[in-house]
Image (tube, rainbow, N blue to C red; front, side, top):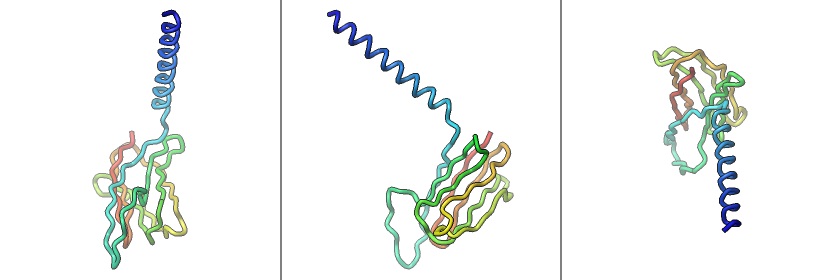
Length: 130
């Protein structure tokens, strides 16, 4: 009985320690993912959908940037950030074969729209800063 009690106490301590580490990690997050809805624009050949996304984006609050990663090259892309009134905040055109990573200066507090578009790809997502 005494051994069972010691084992139960040890389990409770380890669970609470784990929960404390998890909650501290969640409070210490300095990045926020931007959910990108992808739509492949059909060309002459249909590309199969894969589990890995074509693009990923996130806000890095520590560095003060929005970061966009091209995971699978899809030709020339235009990456644009607009505010909800439609005004352009940032706009750049890249060749995804040569430039797989773009950093965008973080705009002021507000709600924004990220568009990643090209002849063979379209990805869009909304995000909020502040």
